[in-house]
Length: 110
Length: 113
View 1: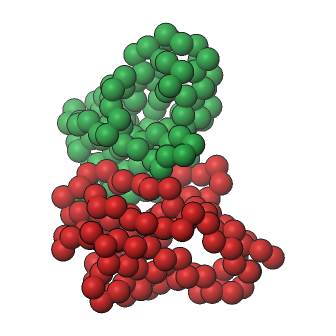
View 2: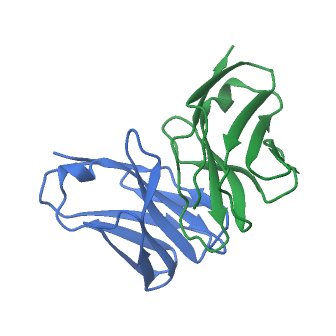
């Protein structure tokens, strides 16, 4: 899987939107962009994924740049329960496991 | 909830002893995975399975073996545990394998003294 770059940590306030960036300048045409998050002392949890178009689900939105070299995970209204490490992962359709980087540690202030 | 359980949840053992971790799923999904997570590293794939008796190595497979004799269970064995295998181990499942969403278990914290 190709490499992604994320900020080590970000801080936001409760009930405000959060934009988590991810750079993936070496993305290939067959790579899907996946986001997972890991709450303290839990296993990773799937958040959202996309290929080219922006995606929305009940947890978040994924905005993908037109050239696909970057993406942004959007939490529309952060709660304290959203405090976690967020991983941006490129996943080739042929890949078996997930390749996790160090992710972004999101801190939510009350 | 993807119906994944791991046992034991915590284990302390001594160097040189064999250890087996169990991952159990209730959804009858074909694909199962074992990862380890260490401070300063993201999760790393140890082994995976794409069906009963069908397994393959991942990125960090040395010192580990796996078995899958039935769909619902995927076992990870450390034949002779070493301190470098102290880690948190996560099991995951997916419906269709390559490129698909994975669902993770709660993890097993293993300490090798």
